[in-house]
Length: 191
Image (cartoon, rainbow, N blue to C red; front, side, top):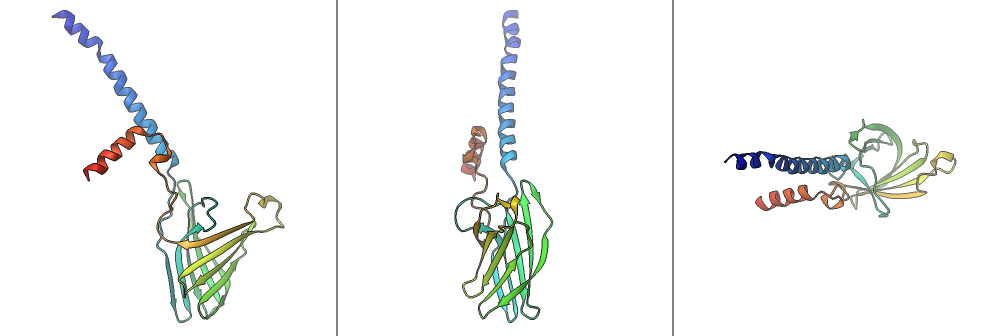
């Protein structure tokens, strides 16, 4: 009887080893997910026009398909009586959401659109057009050539205002996290 009691106590270190190994792997997978999950822009897209007032909101996304943008949400309010557009832009990077940048720009109004130019950034010029007939907002970012430290920017970038979340948001399939994938599959199967 003493031999079996001694044998059982000697095997506890093996169980503890595998429990600790499992816990370490789960912690590693959680760290991978936390390290790669950043801020996600979730905005509703809207274009509105009423007499001399035009408003639009959403998040910027690329239309040329050449890469991902940092999440940026924007609200634009244009008043024909003042000939200006107010643009409030909120930038996000990693897990940080920055205070909105609010600026006024001279605007050109037509029967079914409003156009304005944001020339504030040192390296780029944004030309935006709110089309109230087609209910879309498009913009072009062009790199300024007179700035030597702006070479990191692409020469031209096409954007549109959209709603929802970023299509390239974090996915479990992008990382080796087998335990969390199993847990997610079990939870998905029970709901």
